[in-house]
Length: 270
Image (cartoon, rainbow, N blue to C red; front, top):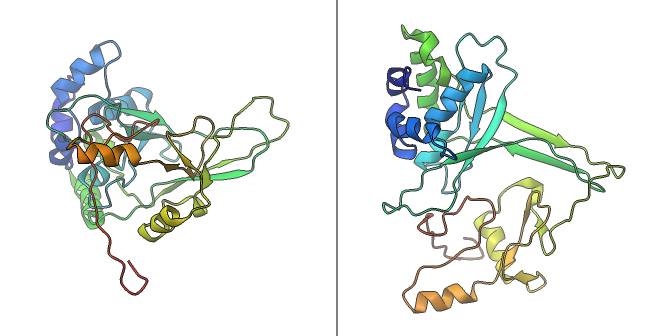
C-alpha cells in the first residue's frame, strides 16, 4: 500500500474514492493495526496480493445518484491477471461507530457466497445490475485506462461496469445436516427485489402482517419484516433522533443518515 500510493492517487476515480473511503495514509495505518478497518485502498491492494479480481458491490441504499453507489461498484483487477472470469465478490457495509461529520463511509466488506440450509429451494440473486447516471463516465474511464501509459498500474479499476450480474443459485437439500432457524415474522420480497414506494405503503396499510419490536433472529434471505415505530414517534416528539435496529451494519445507528423522501398520493398513484 505504501509503495503503490501514487498508483491509487492517479486513478481516474481517485477524486470520488476520497469522499467515501479513507485516504491511502489512513488506510495503511488501519491495515497495519490489529482489527483495523478496511477501505477501497485495502481492497485494491488485496486484489493485487491474491492475484484474483475482486468485484465490489454496494447497493443503492440512497438511490442510484448516491456517490458511494456510483463509486464503490467496481472490479479491482490485479496486474498480470490470467483469468478475469474468476473473481471474488464482496459487499461494502459499515459497523456502527461515531462519525462527527455524519458522512457515511464504509469501513469493511463481507464476502458474498453461496450458502446451504435444509428444506428450502431459494434462488438468490445478488445483482450489481444497477445503472447509475455515471454509466457513460464508466465507459470513458475504461477507455482512458486502456489508453494510459500506465495501463498495467491502472488496470486495477479498469472494469467498473455495473451491468454484470452475479447470480448465486443456492440449491438447498432436505438431506443437509446443518440446522438453520428461519427467522419468524418475515415475508418474502417479490422476485428478490427491494420494495418500491407503492409496495411499502401497501405493507404499512396491511393489517394482516405481524409487527415486531426488533429484527427477528434466524435465517433471512430476500425477506423483509415490519417494525413497530411507536418509540421513534415518541422520540421525535421529544426532539430526539430516531433509533433503528440493524443486524447487518447497513445503517449507522449512532449518526447515520439516509435520504428522507415524502410521497403524495394522487388518484391512486404516488
